Length: 478
Picture 1 (spheres, rainbow, N blue to C red):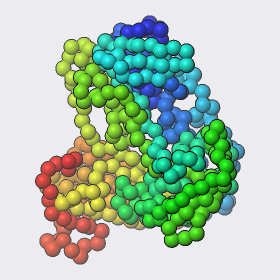
Picture 2 (cartoon, one colour):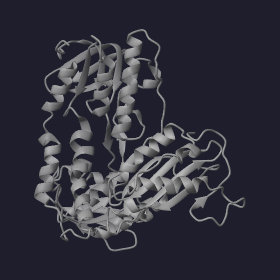
Picture 3 (cartoon, rainbow, N blue to C red):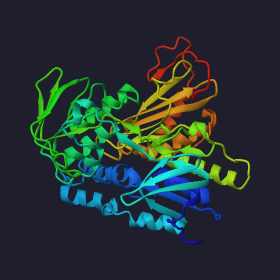
Picture 4 (cartoon, rainbow, N blue to C red):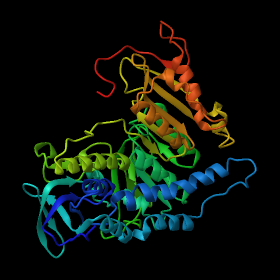
């Protein structure tokens, strides 16, 4: 493999954005060939996931979960706790102290040129790259892949006070004595978990329930868990005027952005805290062109407008990269892009793991079965006070699972079995023969499948844990 030339003006494939989705797309597009590829990145190669999202957040959350588990096991000294200094040091090690040199080495060794700057589609297979020192126009022989990620949405009411965003939360270096978290999604709930464990007094304010993309009971159980950890959770609460006496507009990441913040809220007195985190969603970064209008232009990851999840972006990157390679070699695309159900894990306590349809979103024609995870010996052994819920959504006409949700400590490890069952469309009558090891949490599958195979009563009533409705037209993924 020849050394990639970052000064070249023409490449076979140009990827704008060096996060996981873009890296994988470039890798698959040139694998086993003499094709050339370039990744354009204006910050750190590795993207949001490596430095500001997945890796630092889980580096913080896993020890907290371990401490919580240890504190709930007879035979372990109580009040294990976490050390804020050591926890932040662990975070720093997992983000390579915010140094991307190892990522650059990987790209170079793979045959991918790394070009620093901001890239924007500018004409037919053309990309304009702007850096502090120059502007270049690059051309792709085969394809351009846009993997520019997403940016946080800051409502106008908060913009003037320079609030913390998710980067400040994962990159925290000065732990605020108190903080108001605005939002009820994954970032808000996970951030509240580690900020509370680090010693901040956290007030979480959401205008709806928590984790609204899941069934309502999921958010309720997570809210209970946050409250048990000391977080002041205020759901169905609206915010009013927000003020801050002093604003530090040039503040760094994870340090105070100004003086105390006061937030007016419905149904109570104003909340005053040392800092505020606004976690009200993200939007795709602009890409300069519409991929639907050009057969040489692709969008992957957050830029595609799909689920903002690293594993989904990497899946798209693999599929897109393989398609570019096949087209470049004059082959028929062997594996067309499909849209499988996308799994997601929320690393709160309790954890949330879900894939496919939820009961509330399934529509007519599907039923759900649920069971108490605490009644499963292998799960109950994980904590002395283990509690959780598991739910499947069933398509009776096809005898398959179309959705699964688990809530409880460590349930993320149960999720891939559900994903395989859904993607492979394994019939329930076959799935019942998948023997789960005893005593493990995976035995919950026995309970769920047996319930799913129990015929519902004709009047659809009276059977606990089961909901039966009529059938809608169209496929389960409509």
